[in-house]
Image 1 (cartoon, helix red, strand yellow):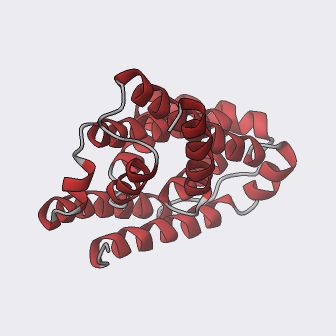
Image 2 (tube, helix red, strand yellow):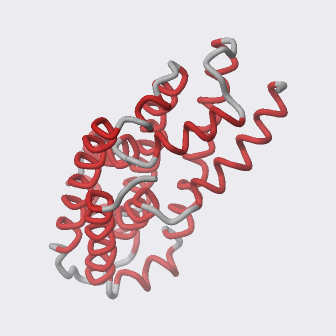
Length: 212
C-alpha cells in the first residue's frame, strides 16, 4: 500500500474511532466546560501524546501479543478502569460556582491548574485504554506493518496523533464558545457530576467486562 493511500485510509478509520463516544471524549468535555479552552486543549494534547504509547508498541509487533494475552490485558484493564473510576469520583465531587463571564472564568480557574498535570490526565486516559491494543491490531493488519520502513511508520503515527488532537481541539473550541459556555456555567457542577458518573460507570465496565 502506497504512503498516500495509507494516509487516506488511516484518516477515515481514525477519525471515526476518535469521534466515537468514550473516556477521551468525556474527559475533554468535562475539562473544557469546567476550566476553559486552555485546559481542554492541553487535555486534548495529552490524549494525542498518549497515542504514541500504542503506536510504539504496535510498530514493534507487540500489539498482537498484548491483545492475545489475558494476563497483560487484565493488568491494563485494572489500571485503566481504576484511573477512570478515580476521574469519575473527582467529577462527582464538583461543587457549584458563581456564574461569571467566560473570560473571568478562565482567569480564575486556569492559574490553579498545573499544565503538566492536565497533560498527564489526558495522556493516561488514552494510554491506559484497554481497548487500544485491539484497535491497533486491526489497524496494523489493514494498513500498517512492522516490516514497513521506519520513516513511513513515523509518518503514519504522527498523522494519527495530529488527527486525534485536531478532533478534540474542534470539540474544545465548540464547547468554549461564549454562548454555549455561559449556558453550561449555570449548571456546570451538575454536568461535572453527570460526566463524572459516566466516567465512573465506564471504569467499572472496563474492569468487569470481557474484552473480545
